[in-house]
Image 1 (spheres, rainbow, N blue to C red):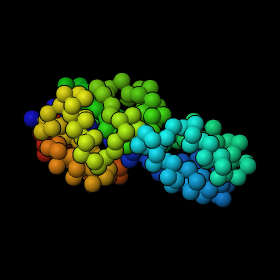
Image 2: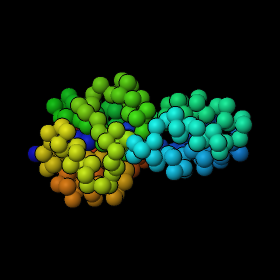
Image 3: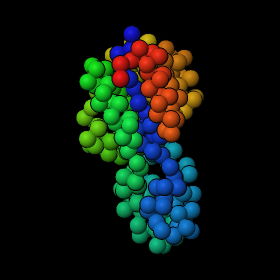
Image 4: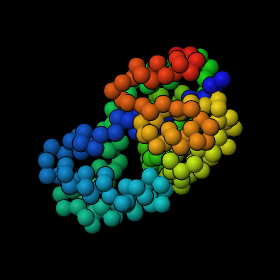
Length: 203
């Protein structure tokens, strides 16, 4: 019987769209492309995800690569970019309903510490029973070790867990570790509800 529902952040709880984020950070097309390439597609961005680099060090690297007008804004950009992601209200309402039905709710996300702190302090953050974040654990999906770390940290039985993630490889890895899941499409919320119903999860 499923007792625990685990949610990813990007393109599940939060809409991850680089174009929308950079459009919100600058009205200039050239600047938008520079921000995408220098920051969001960078090696440093991946290091922030896996916890091998901190924000201050990343900011120093970005300053080296950015034109002067963006150099002067990099601290502001790095401290506000995650606020530009749309919060998925359908998922928020689902989480609240799951809690009403006595399920435990956890987060498992490849993301930065700052994004974790942002979500934790949102209104929806109080509904989570725990968070497992790649940058804190220094391990990332789809490596199996992060799933076993999730089970160990919160005392979860794999076959009592259901994982919602937008990446097929992350769901496949979870299944290998004994946890059923659903590959989420942010444009097809009903398919998730159908899958939860199929697994006898009350929503």
